[in-house]
Length: 276
Ligand SMILES: C[S@@+](CC[C@H](N)C(=O)[O-])C[C@H]1O[C@@H](n2cnc3c(N)ncnc32)[C@H](O)[C@@H]1O
Image: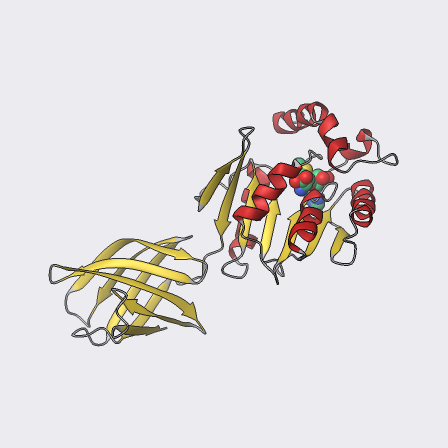
């Protein structure tokens, strides 16, 4: 057993009281929680579940997925508090059964579903909010799949980060526990043709994307090239700044139907469109 798993088992024993405070019941014994496949069960505290859903700004129409859903606390709280459809994927059949009983007790079985399965096999691409309490390594293993999810999907991880993907937000709750939020960025890497910039016709925008950040250059044929750094992508929203003839410009727009559409310097007369 590796160090990581041992730490989790110690944590689980320490949290045994907490587990019952969450959603354990008379049919569930803690020994049943040890068969977790990649990591064993340690429950997210209800307070933290609320904070995670709050930082994800859950709203009507969202579909919340919790990967490795344990006793179901996050999907159940999402359904109770926000009345949104929620799904838990869990490998341990005893925990799946417990979470279904918990959903019934909470009277949300009509909008909450628990699937028995492996998070590395099951499809969760429908999610608009994805919650995790797994571990740095498992988050990292899931990262390529998460980055291909719909732009704007909010991903919240209890305690653990996702190596090389800087969180968009960090939250710390009153007891010192921490969670991280990432917003899946639109994929805009590559070459775009801009029209609408006054005095700058037929501009090419070359984007070099690194998750939610990008560097880029604007060029006009073989003429002058303007380089910029620190472009930001938040879901579909795109923004960057550049300097042209000693003047500072900012662009704010969004990816819509395969086009980047937006405004320069928030000026409604300076509407620009970029196509691949
Ligand atoms: C730390 S617990 C978190 C439980 C729940 N998400 C929460 O926040 O309360 C991790 C859960 O992932 C489950 N798990 C581990 N590996 C899994 C896998 N490959 N597929 C599905 N579930 C898995 C474990 O059984 C455990 O319930």
